[in-house]
Amino acid sequence: MPRIERDSLGEVEVPKDAYFGGFTARARKNFKISGSGTEKALVRAIARIKVAGSKVNRGLGLLDEAKAEAIISAAREVVSGNFDEQFPLDMIQAGAGTPVHMNVNEVIANRATELLGGQKGEYLVHPNDHVNMGQSSNNVVPTALRLALLDLSRGLIDELDGLIDALEDKSDEFKDIVKVGRTHYQDAVPITLGQEFGAYAHNVGRVRDLVEDSLSYLREVGVGGNAVGTGINTPPEFRDRLVEELSRVTGEDLQPAEDPIATTQSMLPFANYSGSLRGAAEELVKILDDLVFLSSGPKAGINEISLPEVEPGSSIMPGKVNPSIPEAVKMGLFQVLGYDHSVSLAAKEGHLELNVMTPLIATSLITGTRTFENSVKTLRKMCVEGIKANRNEITRQFDESTAAATALSPYLGYERVAELVKLVLEEDRSLKRTILERDWLTEPELDRLLDPERLTSPGGVDEDLRDEVRKRLDDTS
Image (cartoon, rainbow, N blue to C red; front, side, top):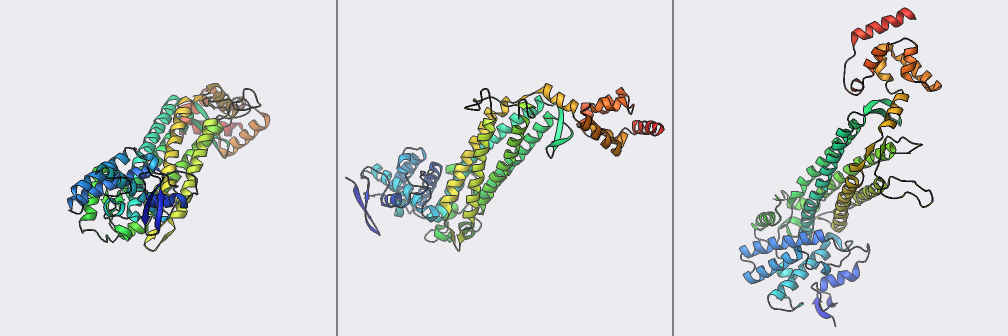
């Protein structure tokens, strides 16, 4: 038999053994939209706020010792994951996240009641009057989301650091491999494979910094603002003491909101964090596209690098192997971009004193951060660390290309080199052999100008050689 609880709407049935209460039971029936459960990272963060809040209320003489200790103990059990099955709500729920917040309050209240010798539903510790003292969903849930993202982002940043290291290792491994650089998908000028991977590492480093920089805005919290940020029903010192205690509980350097009313209204810090994920995802998609392009083939494509073979590539074509890891990772990153769009839409919905779209923002950012971390980890472990350079193919393509032509322009002149390139392409000839046949440069001169290090690094024109070659060409023209 269920137990019967009562609220302002009347009686409500609650499963007899449930630690949640009537508010959660109603929300469980009301919200069945996404099919996803409550984000446990958010639950744990709310529970940490309850630990800090109870300590402050006890210190201010607002909460007696026994109730405070029971709440703190119960909340710590929630943080430890002991009651994960007691949080059944869909994250697409009533605005501002009141259902998930009250779900946590009820579980803590019922567990604290048990610790004081009572029964579930008896509420010796009340979810509103005691667990939620001096708090409001409008401040608690955004603060909890900040805490959850600060915690989750550590894993993402660690994985980005790991990817940077892996790309730098490949840059060092490939540093002496000169290849055809490409722009517009066309042959351009020489570059080393190591330089390409070094650029990837640098750009991942930049987006890693972008994500880390966005975290500073999440450390300003509005908890203690109560409803619209004014701090109604709280002692003047409550807000500062709560943030100070929450910093101790979480290990984060948190600051009270400079303008708590503005903090309650605005989702800008979350939009900013989401934007950093968007920029990072876009940069990684570019790198993934490059890896797929450079590994295309193996016989009818570029085939400059080989990606690790992780699975057969076709149910019908024997021996075919696809770039499965880049494809999967790119889908993960596209999902992150989709979450960012949801956050962007939700962040606009701040009307007057409150933005009610916090639950959508929370589930989008928590899931997006986790998806991003797993995507980066998969890319590093299952792809980048196992990339091999196809040196013979790279050398063949470079020798048959016109990529070195630009380096000859200062000596032979732009127009002469342009005609030379056109001839080489039309007749499928070697650039080097064609130049030597015309006696425009001697073989030692040509080897000197086409030295790999000279082709792939800054260097001025050898004016003496340029003048000598130009005079020779003028004399023979």
